[in-house]
Image 1 (cartoon, rainbow, N blue to C red):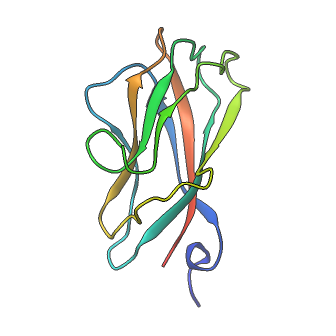
Image 2: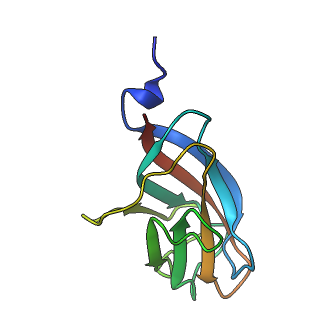
Image 3: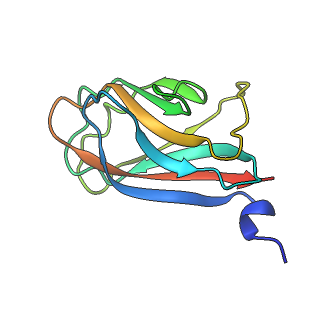
Length: 127
């Protein structure tokens, strides 16, 4: 029987403790399995450890700066620790599929002003 990730939109990965301050490199969130193609449908950023004020530009996707799925995501309104969450989706935009072995991640271009982490859930399906 096929994996649920191939039959429905499901949780592909959940990564806690993601640094939300400006970084030099991306944080890996999901690596596409060998022989599969991933279609990311939405991402949930949740439970920040502190305010994400100042975090006005985050990129999601593959590549060094995560620029293949959603760019310039503003998370600065997430100011309540441990309870805030935001759902980031595609908003009717064309994207490139995520081939086997590609790594989907987050890149804080302009991250939170102060030290903060969050949990990030990646949802989608595999073909």
